[in-house]
Image 1 (cartoon, rainbow, N blue to C red):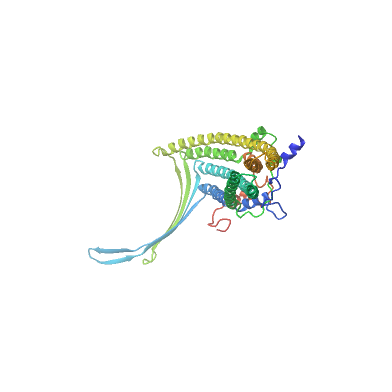
Image 2 (cartoon, rainbow, N blue to C red):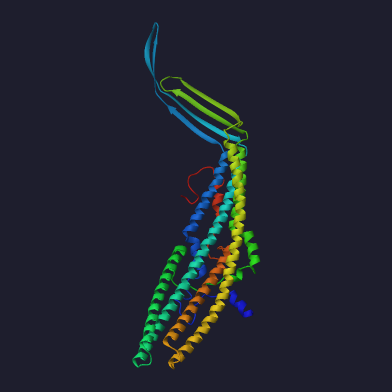
Length: 462
């Protein structure tokens, strides 16, 4: 039991039967955490989500502007031609150039609490978007871990196939030598040749899979893989059992938290819509001066201040429909919370089952590899004394190869499954993984813009 538990606590992705992996562990090798740190800092999808959150932050400042003053300046200039005629008086033409300048200020005093509720809704949207960013962070790190392990798996598989090809080439050489001295028939040679051709095909397929995995690694991590260290499972950091994992996920998963904030925002939108039916109170002040440059002393200055009360009576049903619509959208948002809870619960159960299956697969594949190694050695010895055919040797060799590939795949699956479980409970983050990065703090930008009254430049200077 102790041996098995120690095996489960730290599993290293490695090749079997003494095979050298191209991306071997070394002092200068890239580690899993190092690669994930690069993805955290430079992944374009994650950076796009951060930019989206910064745009959402501005929604708070936009909402708060509803109760801020509006200041406008106006100016006009024109030309008027006037012709005068009269009894007993001389007539004439007069050219006038009237102009005016003015400044007006409008200050809302009460808007049915629409600004207050809009601000609260915008804040809920910001909080929900932050959880969405945390979820995207998890997805990015999970994709990075998967790409990392895929490269290791496919590299090991390529090495296994290359080793197998060398064995098949030697098998063909030995079979031809035995054919030349009459120990085997032409059929044995043909079987060895067919096996070698199949080995070349399998190697080509493995190399193609490795190229695809390297391309995926480059897409997620941001650079080509060079020398990768073995990946470690996150099992020591997982809850003790599936039930504990589900309960933790329902409390902490960012998808659920984001849905709850969206439900809060939708509820506040009902109050915003209802506020349109309430009285509106405001005050406006204007200062203006009109003049004509051709008429001396023709200048008039005026100033006014006016309080205004507006009581909506009937608008054709628009505000009523918008209120009903907001209520239905709120109901939808609340239902979505339950949907996300079900999805998270299913994800935890599924990923936990995959982890259990990978553990069992490793144990079975390890036993299978050992048995196939013994069987191959025995078949080869029996073939030397004529008790086994060339086909028996080739079949045993192929069975050993397949069991080794299965073991490599199971080792990869176990590490990836542990990362899947970590993501499903909401803890696959840079902080939880202790990545050596400067964590992105969304609150910094929010504090910079939430009360900003003026300015076209973003805090980053754009």
